[in-house]
Structure formats: structure tokens, C-alpha cells
Length: 261
Image (cartoon, rainbow, N blue to C red):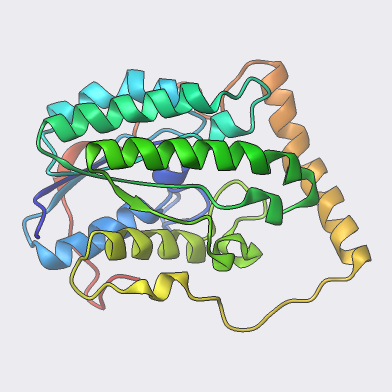
């Protein structure tokens, strides 16, 4: 199926943080997926309403109606990571927001795609307490997606999704390689021309770390990323304060001449 109007909603992952576009902005999996879609439909128009730092209920409140107004025939909904790392996290509350977005968008006739979250506990020892949260959230997402016919990318069961090379140093945002894999996973789930399951294959080569390397990496991460994040939380200030979606209206997409990367 060729899509003519693709709208992406969500948080920083959909905005593209971690994947520089070379022009001072961010590319990300949604832009990369739009390139794939544009090869199948030369008249594709694409909008990206996502804003970093948004919780699931904020995505629903600020982006859902705007997305519906654009009359997409394809929409991606990715939210919940910012909720997952908050002390007040409720899997049921996040799933309720996601399901509301699934229901509202599919009711318009749009095809909707979303994803489950990888096992974050494998990224860092300090993230191990999040594993049960991820399991609960993923279970709810699967149920909601099945109920509304949402195309779902499964990431939890694949070891590659927790390969550090797919993540930025902050361990919250995907790296360029990670965003490329996410885009490829969506393309595969949507059965787009030229797509396959290669996104789920391990990256070549391995990296062995000593205990000293691991401790040093954890200390760098805490001082460079976790500390500033906690400081913003204490100030109740989002990283996306006063920001709006980077591509708020549908606009044509010119795919790279060499094909999607």
C-alpha cells in the first residue's frame, strides 16, 4: 500500500533527538520512514508534531487533534518513555492515553503503527528496576494495539535493541544507527516495498568491557545526563519547554537519490 499523508506524533524519539540532520536540527526514525514511504509514493506529504520531553497524556492533549485535522492515512504513535522513568509512573495510565490515541486515529480510517519498548535494564545496571515497568507497559500496549488493529513493532525480544551502539550516550535517545533500525522496523511491520527483518539482526562485532570500564561509564553517564535530568525534574521543567513540532504541517518529501539510509 502506498501512503499519501503520514503524520508522526510523540516525544523526543519521534522528534529525532540523537540523530543530527547535519543542518543544526534532528532527523530521526520518522524522517527516515518518510523517506522510505516517499519511494513508494512520490506525492507523499509528511508532518511531524512530536516534541521532546512530552509525557503520554501531553502528547494526547497537544498533538492528537492536530494530527487528526491533517487527515493522515498513516500515523505513528510513540510515547511513554518519559513516563517510564518518572517516580509516579503508572502503566495503566500510559496505556489508557495510548489507547485513546489509537482509537481516535483508527476511527478516521488511518493506519496506525506503534512499538513496544526494549529491555532497558540491559542498557545499564541503574536501569534494572525499570524492567517490570517495561513488561507491564508492553503488555498493555500489545492489548491496546490488538484491540484497535494497530501495527506493532516488537522490540523487547531482540538483543540488538539494547546494543549500546543503537543508543546515544544519554541512553534515552537512539543513535543514528538506532533511528535507522527503528525506521526499518516500522517499514518491515508495514510491509513496505524493499523492507525485511534485517533490522532485528545483531550488529557485526562485539565490544567487551571490563568492570572498570563499566564503572567509569556509569559515573560519566550519571554526571553528564542523569544529574541534569534530575535537576530539571526538581525544577519541574521539561526539555521541550516552549517548543513546538518541527514539521507542523504536511509538506512534500523528496527522498534521497541513493535511497533510504
